[in-house]
Length: 184
Image 1 (cartoon, rainbow, N blue to C red):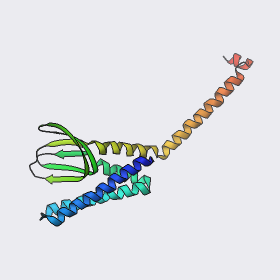
Image 2 (image 1 turned 180 degrees about the horizontal axis):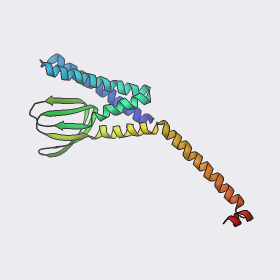
Image 3 (image 1 turned 90 degrees about the vertical axis):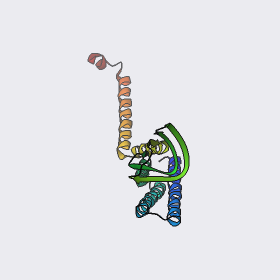
């Protein structure tokens, strides 16, 4: 696996997870929250813990870490706020492009954030976390390159090149032979 990609994704996921958990902890300790808000906060603590675990697994074991990191990046891609539902999550960093009722926008943010609400009247917005999308693409490409079938295909193509070289060598060797002229 690409070492630079492994380090960048791990740092973003582990650092972002720690920031996210600390923000939730601060909110839980300082505010009087409803039961549903506490439950949502606990769910997002688990999500941020998963991000930390995915980043650590990526550093230790690239196969399971790749899959976990790809999943963690995938859940950070959509950004949606509607009249009855709102969801967004980013951990570590976010480059989001969005569309809302006053037009288009984009911004880059370091840190972590989450939003989940049901039944609240929200102004609508739809968007995509471009950074998470790019990281997901790169992680999938790494997973694809580490598939055993890819190594077999590379070996097959190497074998085919060797076979073509042998055939070319035979052609060059028998080029002027009477047998060759008789067959053509």
